[in-house]
Image (cartoon, rainbow, N blue to C red; front, side, top):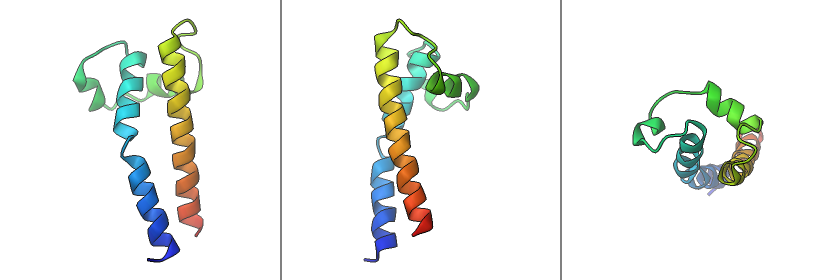
Length: 85
């Protein structure tokens, strides 16, 4: 396997938990437990919730947001490394 193929495999494996993190985060941001929130293309409130502090008193939101930000940052770094290699 080449380095690029290995990076691609790592990128694919790292993308697997994205549905879990995004679902959990969206349910908090949109304040719903409905499963359909995962398939709706609602982006504005999600983006605002990711980069601001929508619910400063909600510790679950803060914890989930921080984990999601770290997850996305690592994903972005892996993607950039894959693209430049």
